[in-house]
Image 1 (cartoon, helix red, strand yellow):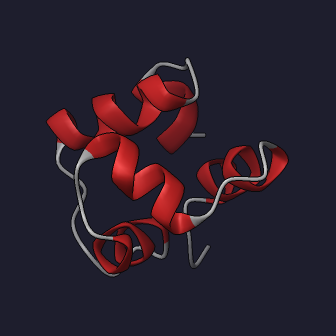
Image 2 (tube, rainbow, N blue to C red):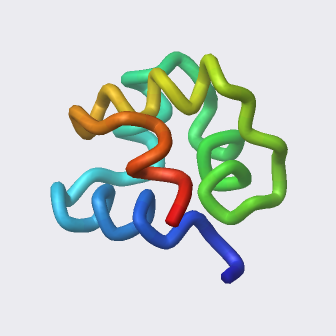
Length: 64
C-alpha cells in the first residue's frame, strides 16, 4: 500500500483537500501530502490531530 488508504478515503469522502486538513492540524499542505503518501514518518501526536478532524481514533484511521 503506497498511502494510508483509509485516510485518503475519509478525506475524499468529505471533499477535503490536502490544504484543508493541513490547515486544521497546523502543518503545510506539502507536509500533509507526504504523510498521506507515506513519504514522511507519522508521529502519534499528529496522528491524533488528524484523526480528530474525522472524529475517529488514530488506530481506526491509520491501521487495518
